Length: 471
Image 1 (cartoon, rainbow, N blue to C red):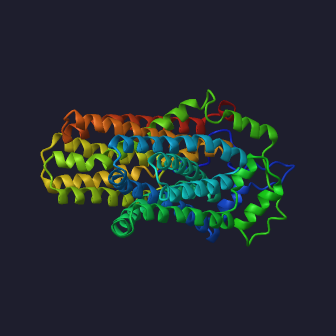
Image 2 (image 1 turned 180 degrees about the horizontal axis):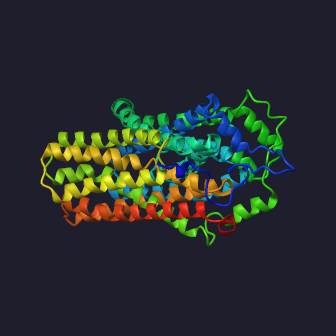
Image 3 (image 1 turned 90 degrees about the vertical axis):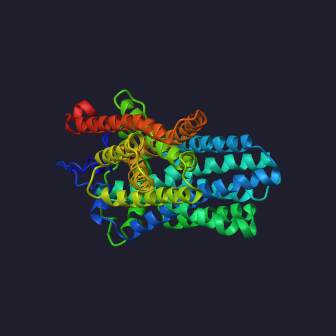
C-alpha cells in the first residue's frame, strides 16, 4: 500500500519539508533530510515520551472530572443543570483555547505555547480543589480547559516536526494514545483517592503533574526545526535545534537550506482558507467532527443504552470497560499500522468495519455474548480510528500553519463531541431503542468515509499535478 499520508505535506512546501533540489550553484542541505537520515534516535524517542506524558496528564484530568461532578452535586447541593453547563462550557473552552493558541504557536513557536498550556491547565485544575464556591469552580474549569486546548495541538505538532518524515503519522498517533492511557489511569486514581481523601485532593493531585512536566519539556524538547524555519529564525538557531536532535553529527559545516521571505509569506497566507485548499480544510474538519463525535456518543451513553436494553449493572460495567480498553489497544495498533499504511486508507477501513458493527447491532438479534463481541469490535476500530485524525491534520499543513491547522481541526472535533452529547441525550429522551440509535450512527460514518476518500483523491491529484498547478 503506498505510504501517501507519510509523504511530505501537499501544500506549497518549505525547503525543510520537501526533498532538496540540487542546483549547479548550491550544495545546501535540507534540514528535514538530516532528520530523515537520523531516523528515530534517542532524542526523538525522548521527545515522543515527553509529549506522550503530556497527553497522559490531559487524560487524567478528563477522567477525574467525571468522578468529581457527582461529588460536587452532593456537597454543594447544586443541580445537574449546572453540571451540564460546566461540562459544555469546559468543552467549548478547550476548542476556543486551541483556536486562539494555534496561530500563536505558528507565530511564536510551539514550545512556549505547550509550556504555558501545561502551567495554566495544571494550576487551574489544582485550584479547583481549593475554591469554596461553584462560580469559582466553573471559572477555573474553563481556564483549565483552555490550557488543555492550547497544549494538546502544540505537543502533537512538536512530535510531527521532530521526527523523520516516514514516521510522522505513527509517532503522532502513538502520542495521541497517551490521552487514552491517562483516561484509564485517571479512573483507577479516582477510585483510590475519592473514598479516602475526597474530590478536592483528587483535583489537586491531577493538577501537579502538568506543572512539574512544564520545566521537563522546557529542558528536554527543543523548538522544532520546522517552526524555526517557518518563522524566519536565524540559521544558527536551526543548527542548534538540529544539533540537539543529532548530537553526533557535525552540522556547523553544513549549508542549511532555508525558506526565503517570499516563500514564508506565501505559505503562511495560503494555508488553511485559500481557494485551492479550503475544500481540504473543510473535509478535515468534517472527519474530526464525525470521528470524535461518534466515539464520544457511544462511550458516554453506552451505560444508559445497555440499561434500557435490559443488561444488568455488572454486564454494563464489563461492556463499558471492554469498549475503553479496546479503544486504547486499537489506538496503539493504529500507531504501529501507520508505519506501513497511509492514514487515509487506514481510517477508511476502520470506519467501514466499525460501521458494519453498528449495522449488525441495528438489524440482527444477538445475545449478550454477541453484543459484547460487537462492543469489542467498536472499541478496536472506532476507538482506534481517533488516533489517526490528529495525524491527518499534522501531515496536511505546512510548517507555517501546522499548529493552527491541527488546533482548529481538534477544536472542531471538540464541537463534534458536544453536538453528539446533545444529540444522544435527545434520542434517548425520545425513547429510541439501542439498535435504532446504533443504526443511525452509520449515517455520519458514511459521510466520514466519503470525506476521507475525497481527501485521498485530492492529495493524489496534487501529487501528480504539474508544479505550476499546485503552487
